[in-house]
Length: 260
Ligand code: S5P
Image (cartoon, rainbow, N blue to C red):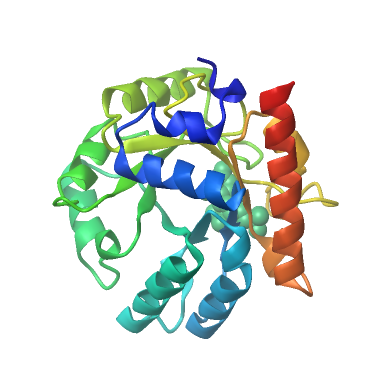
């Protein structure tokens, strides 16, 4: 079974990982493979954006440490909005340390991420202790991680060998790993979900090394299952219509891929 040719619906039954199953289910039900990167710095902005884009997304990605006014109330509110609009929450923490350290970062500090984020990102660099460390904190809650295996930024050090190592790590830890952040078709395994950031229509880069492709190219040429769109939506005059537009483009490309 080639990941690129399978429907999200059929892929749900290939895995027992609870967050993967939930995400495949949401993607099929909402016909959305769009994740919005909610890179805003005020809690009110985050909640207002989540309300606006909620109907069109399967996932909302946060960088919770950029909020200048973080409080536990904001994550409580965010969880309510996620339930209301049926999307999952993904904290892009990019954990990259030894297991013991990431476990305390995940389940403590001001953010207590394990309490509210369905998904988090990890770097493969430390080896699979990072995954085991996070997994040890889940205590029965449905939680999972995504391995950042290949980056969108120019000059990235994610070599082919590194990517292979990340894939092996995912296979050996599939109870907690739900997929990869990547820029190409790095895995055919239908259990794993490929998330591709660096997506924007009508713009190819920013001034700090970010590189963009269109949602269509991400899905059809690079093998993305889920496209991650930040400023293409958050900086638009109308984030609601922009989210609707990206959702439709990305899902149409996915439908073309599975039927071609
Ligand atoms: O390789 C990567 C991995 C990630 S998770 N490149 C990325 O840009 N990201 C994240 O995706 C990044 O941290 C940001 O939150 C988002 C892209 O935002 P945009 O505004 O450039 O679309």
